[in-house]
Length: 223
Image (tube, rainbow, N blue to C red; front, side, top):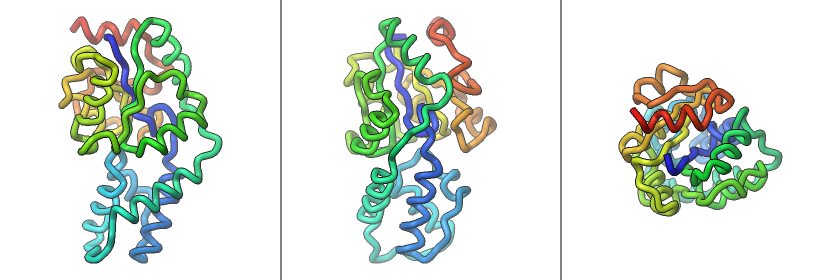
């Protein structure tokens, strides 16, 4: 293991409530529909525009003539303005410190926009841990395509086979596996449940980052 790549929301911090409020607001404004927490859970880990499109398709709602990119930008602006005090999930700081001390390169690989990711990491006092922050606007495709994680590995100068990815969503785990990386599923901040994550065949499942060590991670690469 030479590098560890972390998803942001649900893995390092939890912004689910903030994201739900912003999706709910723009969907109600532009489509006069109710966007529930379950609607967000079903697409968590995808790009914002893809979450909205999937929701509208399920509702059989027309979005002809609507600029979904502009609506997505509006939602992101609401989310950025809503970032204040960010709660770091259990075990995060301890694990990042242990990895950093052990010479492992660290990156964030997120479906969020770069500006949002940097603001959140700074608010959470985590930014200084990371050698790279790769976001959706750095690549052409979002998860479950592996592009974000491969971009991070390239920036770190590490072969994907020597990287481990930490994820709370099935789309992120699938992206890591497609990219040839080890994948650790983290349940604590996940809104999709153990069974959904197990279907993606992660290399390890942990209740939280409190329950993992550098030694356990290194052991994944000897299998």
